[in-house]
Length: 328
Image 1 (tube, rainbow, N blue to C red):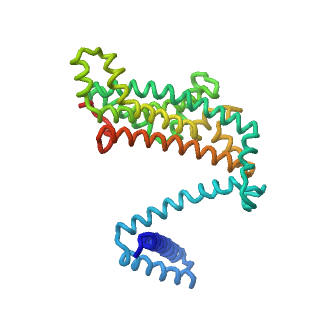
Image 2 (cartoon, one colour):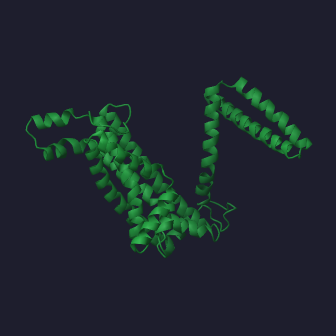
Image 3 (tube, rainbow, N blue to C red):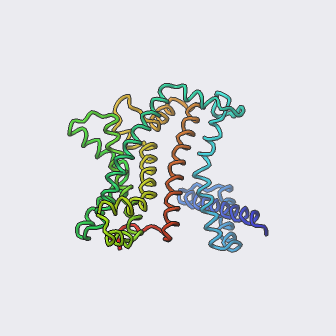
């Protein structure tokens, strides 16, 4: 069977398997509640047949791959719909009247949207710059200290990334209110930087640990000072990871909703908040266009960071980046 047809068959089998599981589950729920119809019984029989037959006709790795493709389709199909309807020439978002770029110009003519874009870019740039400096400095320092000092700090860093963003947002809001900070762009910048600094720390330290210390030691053996070694040897090799961390910081700050929503205050909407608030009054083609532009900026940032890290790995000759530890 040709490869495209095989992939289509695997995807179809995964779809039948998932639908079968749902049908069986719905029948059992109806049976428990005493509400079973003939249609439900037929769905149960067909679903059970799909659950039994699909794994026999498809290998387990292929079935898991098909289910993964089905999950990604379920997740990304709504995004594709938003992007397509961003080019809708008609005023009704539920009726595609034709292709047009007019919604984008309308979005950029809206002062509330353009001011939100400007505010988002300014906060994201400032947060990325500060988080990159502090994160890089902390990564270099933690890579050279003992485990007794490093482990507690690692716990705090990972907590920043693992704890739900809502918890961080509430904590930041309570802190700013208690110390008397006026909510606005500054509080949003500080809230974003807390998260982004931890992200940069992990990315840069992973790169630094994977590089090894042989070139630095050779530079010092040849008479270079610690500052000269850092400027001429360490920093150029760390540059891809530092830039990637900065791009990730910019992206996470740029499209943040939760922390921004709690720390923005009145009249300081960022680009994501402007779209969120606009949806409450009805979806329009201009909002679809604004969301599409924001998606493009986010994908560019994430794609650029991934490309830089991949090139850094290839140039270093490593299979992947370590997540912590001491420099060898």
